Image 1 (cartoon, helix red, strand yellow):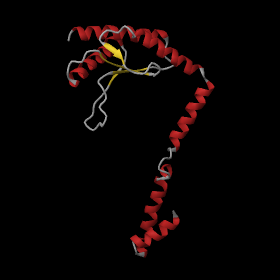
Image 2 (tube, helix red, strand yellow):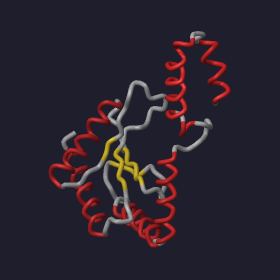
Image 3 (tube, one colour):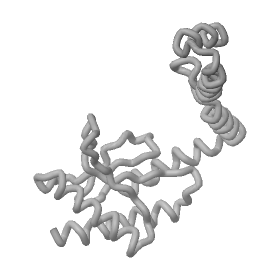
Image 4 (tube, one colour):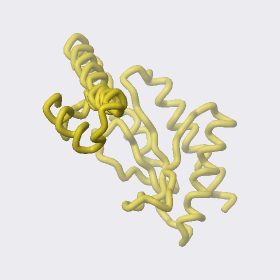
Length: 176
């Protein structure tokens, strides 16, 4: 870096008075690029977070067991859900639901799903996320509802979520 700095500052600036400016610019580049020295390098704070996550999982293997059990419980509870179907992988902690029968337009589908999500939050205190669309997205995600499962959820949490989702879906889709 110093060799490049010494050659570049005189090639680009050429004046001794500008030497301080060149030194400041190169110091800024040196400090700002520390996490990006290699094109595929991981920034240090992300590497530290990943190491900590691995340490937690190694110290508490029951977290993975609980998470898998919670995923299975939610899938079982939503297996007879009317109007929506699970389209995500059975072992994924993110459960993706979509309409069994589309309204014929993406906008209409999103509105129905947002109505279900709003009803769940207002009436049942259950938070779910609907898929959002952007005009800059290259990959158009299907309209759907996402549920995020944690190892910390209890069976009663998951049961409440399943029952609330069934009630909200039936109510909103009946008014369609």
